[in-house]
Length: 133
Image 1 (cartoon, rainbow, N blue to C red):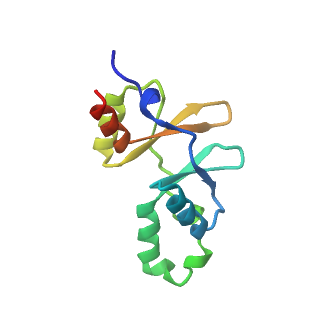
Image 2: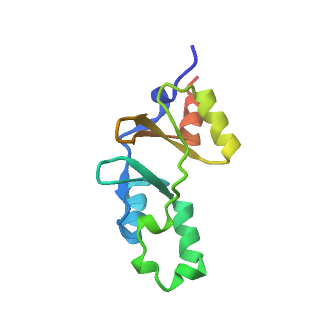
């Protein structure tokens, strides 16, 4: 039987709000040794994703250089977040990541009000699963 995303994903999603200052986003990523934070609204629903790469790109982007200290997660997060369900297979999720050339997908469950993040699956998680076979 093929493994599912839910069997391999990281649970306990680390999140921030849209108005979280960039310095706090960077500090949290550094302290937790993670490469991305899921951005949620006040109800805990998925609205974006911000990665280390997004932080570095924004820091080096001339338009933001002078205003760096005033930026929030909402200024530089991506809103076109690729997501999967816990019941999806690892093969489905892996193919999606390779096709989109991304390193992680947010695992979600759909509710009446929107989509709630319940985990993150990264290429590192898939590699760990391969190594444990």
